[in-house]
Length: 167
Picture 1 (cartoon, rainbow, N blue to C red):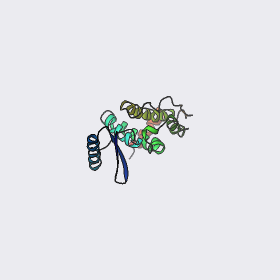
Picture 2 (tube, rainbow, N blue to C red):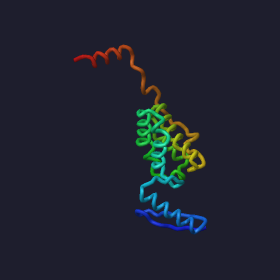
Picture 3 (cartoon, rainbow, N blue to C red):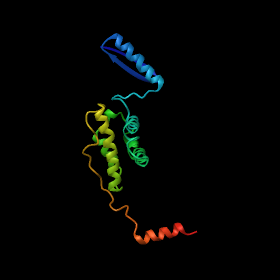
Picture 4 (cartoon, one colour):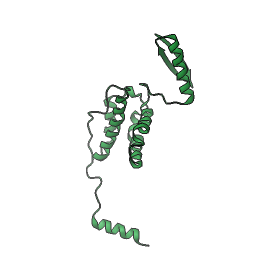
């Protein structure tokens, strides 16, 4: 087994190979990818980088623009602050649970959507062999507020229409 460590833009990279020739090729490819700004997916990828890849690969062309924006909003406001900086391989169920517990008092629907966003993102990471198990499975939902939204009544609808239509 051969191993070589090198630094690129202040960050250390470790390359391993079974033969010296393979090591030379792997180092050259890794440096090329870094110089060209290619996105490298491996088990050391940060959750924020994986989320970007997940969205681009699995959501961008499969959901409406509004749904896509909802995913981004949930990510930026609720998930990223807690686990975005972590390596995907280091995220445990307890970290995902903390994300949900910080949402106590939000609506059940919104908490469920945040939970589902994490679940889908990590499910795809499992499928891509980045992690063995989905840390967003089997989470406990915190106390939620019921009835934070309701349909407007017919009277409210008429009033709203009158306000909008008045000069």
